[in-house]
Length: 100
Image (cartoon, rainbow, N blue to C red; front, side, top):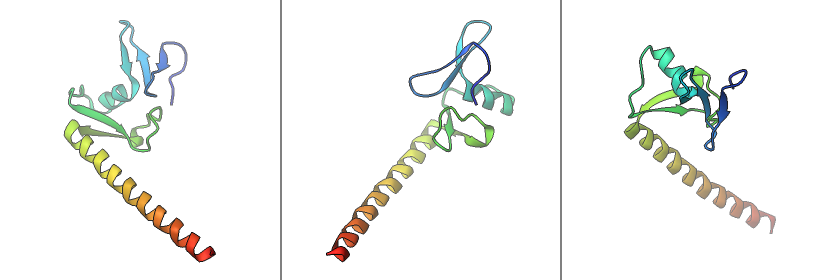
């Protein structure tokens, strides 16, 4: 959900950056979460996009993790991905063997 009008851009990582009246650029997803929580986020808090789309800043797509939790979350995802790749490889081998 990109802002309307001028004063915003999508950065190299895919995040929407908005320009404040003071001229600072801030990440829109962090601003949305701060407004929702009613407080500033700590520097150690990371706003994670649940569906992986960094420009989807709907509150239901955002989760706040501390940096340690965020690293653990991504480590779990990596383990799951590697397991799926192995399963995919095995299934392809089974399929190829059944075609012979």
